[in-house]
Amino acid sequence: MISLRQMRSVVAVAEEGSFTRAAVRENATQSGISQHVATVEESLGIRLFERTSEGVLLTPAGDRYYKKILDVLRGSEEAIIDAQSSRETLSGPVRAGIMPVLARAALAPALERMACQHSDVSIHIMEGYSGALTDSVKAEELDFAVVPAFGGAVGLNVSHLARDREMLVGGAQSGLVHGKPVRLAELPPLKLVTPSRNNIRKARIEDYLTTHSVCVDRVMEMDAMFGTLDFVARTDWVTILPGVICAPDLDGTVRRIAPIDQPPLYLDLVQIEPARRPLSLQARVFLEELKKEVEELVAT
Image (tube, rainbow, N blue to C red; front, side, top):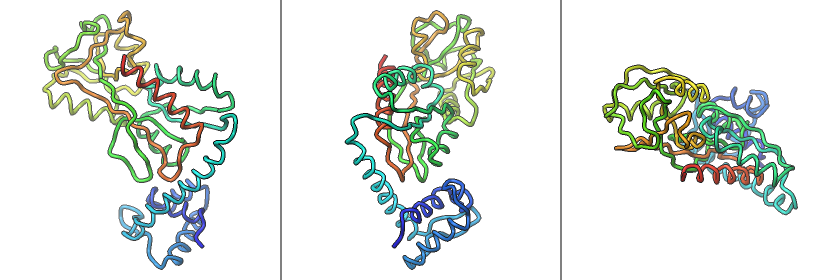
């Protein structure tokens, strides 16, 4: 009889591509993980993994088994969640990963509603960029995270959350007319603040600039959202940011916001969670509150 723990060991190796990293994730020894996998292979009479120069990879039979036991592990967790749904009050921890663009305007209202309506739920927020958040979700350090859309990854469930329009943001010295759509190719050479290459949005912005022949004079990379906002407010530099983070600047007194047009540039946001484990009731409720806030901001 193959146990759930042994299945989890197989899943960990498949998703981490390494017995060593799988052992760290499962808080186990490497020999223990290897023994679990060997027991499963012996019980099934097949090889689940092969070692290559790229790491430990699933065999075709192993890939089919991996996909099947994901359903088993999720089903086991869902049975627990279903049993707990009869409780009168919502309680327990929520560990969520939030991008800086959401932390400025969308996070606080969602947290406020959770704190008022579900006082027994303890929420832990990790703010970070997509790479770090994705790794933390895969390692089950986070229940879910909201990140820019990407190609997906083994071990993650990915679903669409919202689409937001990108804006050109600058201060009084930028020459932007607040609220007026702008075509970047028609502007003088830009002094542009962008995220670093650790951020998925960097490549998307560069592709747009190249494809639409946008002239850029100078580029400054900055992975500090509030630092970026303060810098462009004080100088003639500009930056490109999703509309959701621009909500506090709709009056145009500190920063000027111009929707990028002809063509518009969009940011698709997705929610990611571990493929092997469903969201807890309290995590689902918080995610819905956050999604509601993002949708309202995007529609503004």
